[in-house]
Amino acid sequence: MKRFKKGFTGLFITLLTFSLLILPGGFSSKVLAETHAYDGKAPSYNNCDDSAVTKKKLKITNEDGSYANLELRFSTTCKTAWAKITLSRPAKSDGEATALVVRSTDNKQYGCHNSGGNGEVNKGQTSCYTPMVYDLDPRKAKAVGFWPYTRGETDWY
Figure 1: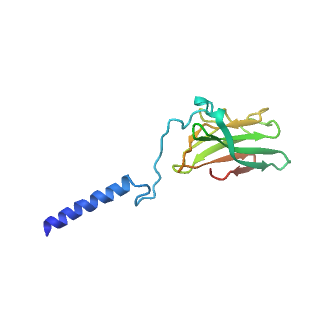
Figure 2: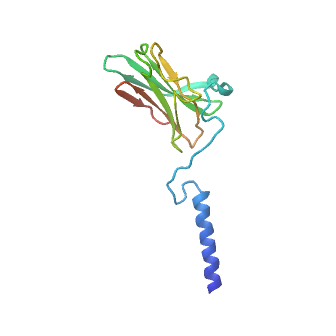
């Protein structure tokens, strides 16, 4: 009987460890970080931007009637996503607008200011884009845009 209990306990611990480490979700709700070759790279990396399409788009309106278009861009070739924000008028100050791309599975996010992006929207500029995140199913991504005193975010794609 002791041998049976010892064998059963060992089997139980092995299965529990397997489910926690291997199975998606397991018994844990902890989100594990992912690392993909395209994460953090500029949309021009490997010409990913050549196959770019806008999957989600949102108009963010400012108090003065000006607006910004926030886009979630997706490369059909590279299976990557990035955010782009475009203002209807040139920025009046440095850092006036920016965008983030966020991945659902691990909350990895990059902003226009990160390496691979083209910098926040500064005085006289009208747009910025973020680096990419790998976005092949089951992963999803969304774009988040910030403009003075307002923000917006797209749905997940």
